[in-house]
Image 1 (spheres, rainbow, N blue to C red):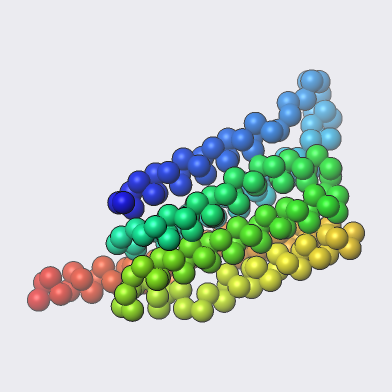
Image 2 (cartoon, rainbow, N blue to C red):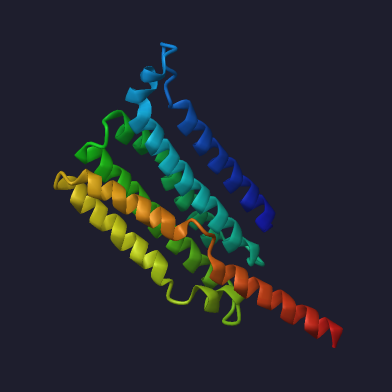
Length: 203
């Protein structure tokens, strides 16, 4: 399979996820601005989840930009990631509707944790498909940021279950800020690989 088809399918699923999230926002029946106030928790969770989905989309794009061939393992790893992302609208609505209650907030953390682990699995599947000289191998390295993010999600789940959901939400925001800028390691590695290939062609 060509990677273009994999990218197109992933883009379509992510677009549907965002669409479902925005459709979950309820329109006020009153025309006064005060009518929006009860919807603020739902709107804030929508903004947070929109940012998260956007982060996955941008990093997914950078990750696949270096891929030369697609294996069956990569296909299933990508579907695994999309499965957890498809649950984001559900936990987003649940957490917003219940004003960041313990259980919905913990489940939001669970979905985010499993999505982050699925992304790590996709990275491993891509590295396994390509040789030792693959441009992403050195760029990804030990992926400390990815592992730290997973640990923070786990901490957020524990805090939510201890009725400290406000701290869990703060952790979700911190992790989002960590990933708000696309992975510069991959961008740098791709730029260097392109420059090297151009120099070789010139020689």
